[in-house]
Image (cartoon, rainbow, N blue to C red):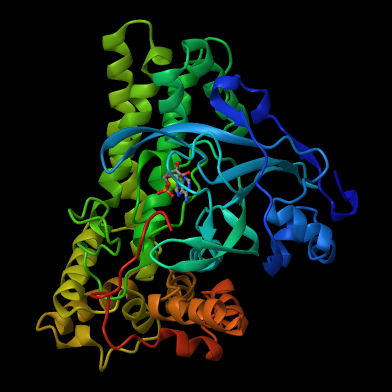
Amino acid sequence: MTNTKAGWNFDNSYARLPDNLFAKVSPTEVEDPAIVVVNEPLAASLGLHAEVLRSSNGTAIFAGNALPEGSEPIAQAYGGHQFGHFNRLGDGRAVLLGEQITPDGERFDIQLKGSGRTPYSRGGDGRAALGPMLREYIISEAMHGLGIPTTRSLAVVTTGEAIYRETALPGAVLTRVAASHLRVGTFQFAAQWGTQDELRELADYALQRHFAEVDTEEGDNRYLVLLRKVAERQAALIAKWQLVGFIHGVMNTDNMAISGETIDYGPCAFMDAFDSATVFSSIDTQGRYAYGNQPRIGAWNLARLAEALLPLLHEDDDEAVRLAQDVLEHYMDRYHQHWLAGMRAKLGLADTEQEDEALIQELLAMMQKTKADYTNTFVALTFDRFDGLPLAEHEDFAAWLDRWLVRRGRQAATLDDAHQLMRRSNPAVIPRNHRVEEALDAAVKNGDYSVMERLLNALAHPFAHSAEQVEYAVLPEQQNCNYRTFCGT
Ligand code: AMP
Ligand code: MG
């Protein structure tokens, strides 16, 4: 037990759910912990004092060598379809310390990742390497900067211990902050290995925790509302991913959060050249989780959630299926609406016209053909820099440009409004793979965190379009093609 001065203010509501859904387990102590990064703005928003977090006591907590006051540590059980195959899973290398109640009364899970073995570890060592934990830190903070719902990273500590993958690597623990760690797979676990009462308790918990604003009084079909709300949040989330060129890489059902946050930054990466077939993950040989498939995989995962919830939706099985199908059909429409609205904004269109979608699709087709950089093309359009673009070499570009400029000029919004809208909708910086690798190399090989710090500063305000950000728009010599990411690192 330790240090109230850091500002820890824990509740442990998940640990009060049926005990089939988790295992009580403490993090495993590590040899020689040292803090390498603390997220000060995030700490402040949680009501935590960064300088106390950096003390030896704070370090011990982030390493799993001490527990914050009020913590009842657990590992959560879940199932999941991994590349289509259903498995019994759970936090195999993570421990939920509890839920921090912020000064504003909000509730966030505080989870250690890489904190040792649990009853769900199967053959794994329960540990994580420094590089991948810093990678999660960088990309989750970039997503936050882009305004995309995401889990966040509060701190990374090194453990002073080596972990063994293909080679020996420095071990690390990441402290992850999430609206919750409820997953589609949590419901699959309860449906498969729990009782119907346990499933219902879990669903009631999710409703209360994430959809308290929803009117689910007696008589409403609360569980249908839950399914609809989760689908709505996923439609909005995946549209945001598509709009910035984010590829999650491992959209297994255990990696889809009920809260609508992006979770589990393993093999994710941002696309450079626009290509809907883009895949970075070394094990995704079929392209199941390719950029262009993400919206459909969202639907597939929601269908698995619907299956898990069926017994709660209606006592009549056929009626339950019909109700679920309605929601799932609606998801694709909602996804499409969010995507179209976002694409219009990227082109500075504040109102809607029937032909907008064709205009957008033609642009994307030209980008695909000319291997145009996704982010930089939209930035160039934002600042009317049409010459010298790879896209401009396309034979149809000049005609497209005329049509778009006429369309943009035809709206009630002024040209200045349109430019402002484009600036807000087209990021100047994304965490480009070569810049992320450069930051990780400096940190892991040389203990130099300054490269990562500069990158994080640029990523914190991606819509600033400032002079310092220009260097982050420079492309790698070889786009996309030979970049590979890895799961389970
Ligand atoms: P992921 O691919 O990161 O979503 O992980 C899938 C499952 O494998 C989860 O249940 C993880 O907890 C588990 N897992 C991943 N890495 C390890 C590890 N090093 N030790 C134990 N379990 C792990
Ligand atoms: Mg996972």
